[in-house]
Amino acid sequence: MKRWYIAAIICALASASWALATPEVGSIDYAEGKISILRAGKTIADPNIGDPILSGDLVKTASDGLLVIAMGKASGMNGTITVRARSTLYINLDKVQSQPRTKIDVIAGSIGSKVAKAAGAGGTMSVASSSAVMAVRGTVFEIYISVNMDDSSPDGGQAILVTCAEGSVALGDGRSEIEVPAGKAAEKRPGKSLGYLPLGTSTIEEFGQRWITGEIAAFRADAPRALAAYAKRYDDLSARFAKAYARFKASPIPKKWSDEDRAGTPINPLGERTLREKKEMAGILLDIRKVLFMFERVYYRADELAAVISGTDMERIQIRKGLGAGDFIRKIQADRAELEAAVARYRFIVALYAQRSPDGDVFAGDDGFFGSAGGY
Image 1 (spheres, one colour):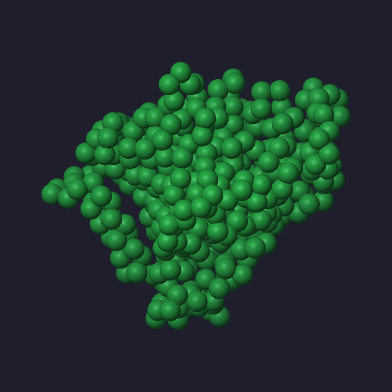
Image 2 (image 1 turned 30 degrees about the horizontal axis):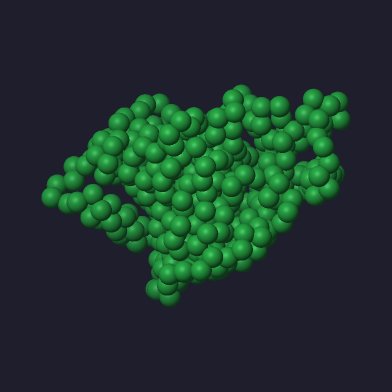
């Protein structure tokens, strides 16, 4: 259902302190179906046209959801990002050498991009998955992420498909890069090189939908093995995250920084106390970052499988002794609130860490391939 009314921005902000720490990336241009935005540990369950999208927001759409985000002036980009049904992503905005850098981290589902750099503006925009990254250069393209996980690879990566309808998009996997021009499709599968796929007689849109349908069919054909791999990786990463987050909770610094942010306390990035606190927090935040990059992907993608499994005979599949597929899905859903609150708290402190850095960057020199594992 279309939402033809404007909500007051103040109602959309989870808290004043969160708004101070995070810039506005854009605003909602169109919304229908079930959509949620997780911000500062709170869920905005019914966002409306005109509501802001802030850096660090986790955006989720249900099976009937559709969200169009209009990029804002601060991003240095013009155009829209379309978040399609059953999708989950983070959208982040920071600055590198005073130039805006927008990064969209697609965890599950599919999105469309129709974005170009604003006239006279600097900055960059990229769209990343666990397997590849797309450099946005003023193009119209779609990215689709498979529900299947490669349990043989260390990072549990998943296949992605990129289709381009206008212009071209650069697709890279950290080892090589190819250009995907208008009317072409390219695929990246874990352990394999980037490559083009023949469209045949299909349109770009038809090809993308056929690819997704094929990935779901492949999951159904090997569901017991696939679910066992998801469950094992989920248990391993959940334990690692809990261990890393325990150090975070035990430190007094996150509360101190939050209190300072709430009170509007001036921060001296080069002050002795600030440097000492950053040194202590850097290792704690980095430990969480290392596990969270994959944990969130396994979590939200396994959560996405609920739409495929729930209410079907697959619920009775035995993943391991005493654990059925339905039990696994319910466990993930039961863990949701606690996990999302912890991740939101972590990301907020990462933003406050950035405020205490002279250049606004975080984990300089340890940006990894995508530089988005910590969200900034």
